[in-house]
Amino acid sequence: LVDVEKNSLFASSFRGAHSRLTRTITQQRIRALVSAHQDRDMKKRDFCHLWITRINAIIRGVGVSYSYSRLIRNLYNKQLLLNHKILAQIIISNRNCLYMISNEIRK
Amino acid sequence: MAHRRCLHSALLHATALISLKKSPSLSIVKALTSKPNPGITTSNLEPSWFIPWSYIRHFSSRKSDDSENEAEMEESSDGEGESDEMASDMVRDYSPEEKEAEAAAIGYKVVGPLQRSDRVFKDYEPVFAVVQIGSHQFKVSNGDSIFTERLKFCEVNDKLILNKVLLLGSPTQTIIGRPILPDAAVHAVVEEHALDAKVIIFKKKRRKNYRRTKGHRQELTKLRITAIQGIEKPEIKTDGKPLKAAVKKPEKIAATA
Image (cartoon, rainbow over the protein chains, first blue to last red):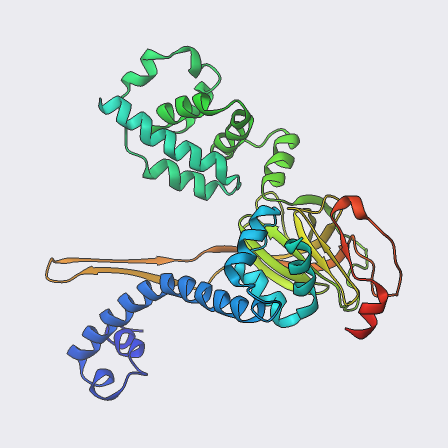
């Protein structure tokens, strides 16, 4: 591919003039690359937020005044190293395993 | 003053290295390259410490190695053996096989022999394990494939044993490790060493005439999980391990779950 074609191929899915006019193609391409760079870091944050929210939602159903923060405090006290990603996955796939973990930790 | 400042930052980096405890030499090289360059006068002041490290200094042209080695020696004697391996990893002299085994243990894998005519791939069992490789954790089951950071010292079709297992689960039983389970093992086979898709690293500061473009492909290893050991497969059996921090679900509750 010639460089000009590479440029317009990058922006071929953009809307309106952003995929047709060469000057705006270069501009929008730059903005897209910058956003991609930033969002690669944001992606990690976003997923962590998501997992925390999910864990919080499920844990609050376990008992009265039991919450995500208490779960994490208990995890650290009992020296478990499971991270948030794994906790969220366990919640969704094997709910009973999570209940076992939380019961074991609460003691 | 500059010497002390450099030493201080070197100490920080050294503590980070020692506490991280992950093998990949990429991270170590990154840490070393990111350090500032102290003066060479540090080496003259403490020559006695450099006798064991001198072979490293020959191969790596970075002056930052000196103060970092000083800092690591100051830090702890536990870290000595570890930083020895890490520095030698950078040197790429893996002559003794024990060093390979130790470095593999840092990444929580043990390389078994190459597989020839073993039938390793069984059917799916509803048992899962949470295993840690480097700093990433994976919830794996039989027959899963996993992309991890590039694992050194193993080629394609090598059998690995991942021994940092944090959790074992099955429909009837959950075994929690604190933090790891000592006698659980997950067997895997290296499927391929591959490069990730290319990401373009693009930095721009507007109105300042600054723009940088860089492409990056991360090196990955694809593992296929073949077996999980340390938990009863779901035939209804009960055995108690109360001392080993195992949590078992009694069968009555299991029946209702």
